[in-house]
Length: 169
Image 1 (cartoon, rainbow, N blue to C red):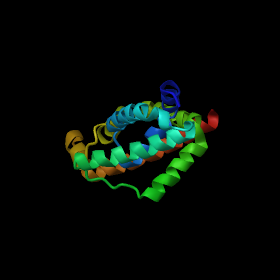
Image 2: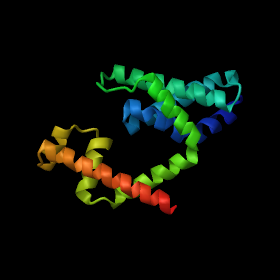
Image 3: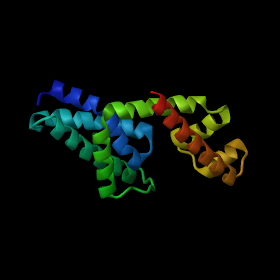
């Protein structure tokens, strides 16, 4: 496989590959960094890939290993889902395809934008800035229990909103 075809293949599969790293890292910046490293490594291996499927499978495994190495290197204590569950997730992502994933991601972004400002702030602190419940509580002058209750309500509201968006699409 030539480098140009390989890069196009992996860039087209970017959402799927990134979604496969999310359960391991839960950090969009780290996922992007690892995706870039995976692309660089793939370019050096381009001639060894038989076809697009082989390249994507290789990238998926490489990205997952890099993600786990990232956690170890940065001494992040995270629950990593067992390998067989990650394989099931990868199979489901392959089955659904990139367009369905992109549609769901667009719906989620739209729904997050519709949240009240305080809820958006909680989402930002928790998922973008990776703050713990106690830190969020301190920053927003809330109890930890109130933060977790708010997150639960936000999750439910986002789930319902995304489902409505996808039904209407």
